[in-house]
Image: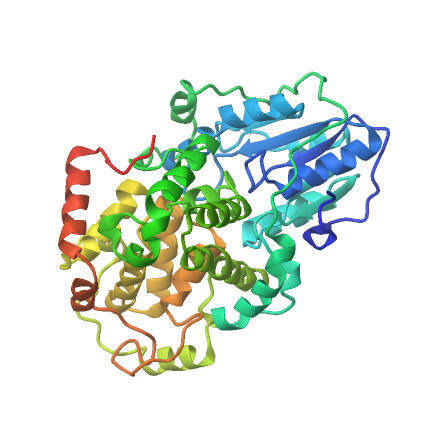
Length: 470
């Protein structure tokens, strides 16, 4: 079945060249073979010209906060990607640049032999910048394809300001798009010589490869999450079998581990929200379970975040907040903060609050904070920071350095939700104004904070996570 036209954008005015060697798929965001609209569109073009497809993936040392955790998560996925691409007859180049000053022209060299280049549509500043800059330097047609959302982002023509406004629009369109994608089927297998920029990665060599990269080696790999397609599939199956039936009841109880924990794999594109949604829908129907609460989070809330980032210039800016929230921040800008912490104190989990410290340690050790406690984490950073901008900068910095689901539309939206985005005014109080606040007393009433704190202390002590999924 052809890829829907509303998923595809042409990024330049160059033509396709039927007489070249292959069609190039540039996997910037969606680092997977299965359920990848972008790869399928590249195959569509290639089959039209009876050409093979070359899949290009790059990992550079030059991105901000490049470290062992982020690098390892990507590299761990490479061997399985290679196996699956070989099986379906698509060529593979994994370009691992070990130093910050390594040549960054591999894409352009590969594109010289490409009939067309297809890449990922992703509404964050870095991907937008890459797509614009690269496409203008190519002499072949360049397309971006939305493979991140179930309902294509283009179908939401304006910025939506809350879940209640986007929900009916998504639900109306969902039957059209919530369908399994075709498998990759190429008419011409890739049998050309693999270019020299390719780095072969084996399961055993992944950590060694990362060790020799010019990156920050002080941020260790996650104790909980292993990267790659196989790990993503394993976590999904574990969620379906053990957690879906209790998700609605226990999702806001961090110590009960009832959530899917799929956000790192979604962020790095190692699995798609479409695959997860279809699997959850079908499993729930087969076992007579209710999946509405989970699908609300996966589809409506997640695609609200993508809608937000696709309609603003800078998704990290406080200027994107509702007028009432900005008004209250101006009004309460000089309210006394007591205590007030520095970014380094936040980073090192050095506050007076054992629960908050545990949430930050979860970030340091696992690379992710449970969603319900992450709201509390963010609200307290606002309360304990000298200014709102410093609070925002601290949250962004910690996510970009430590989080496996950082630099993501969901991350930006979740952070700014702490300041009032996609929320409503509440009762006015110091520092927050009418922005919703959260207290440790409230967390103690609603959740088992003691069990969670003890779990994180044990994780810190042993360095082993019983919640790691093999």
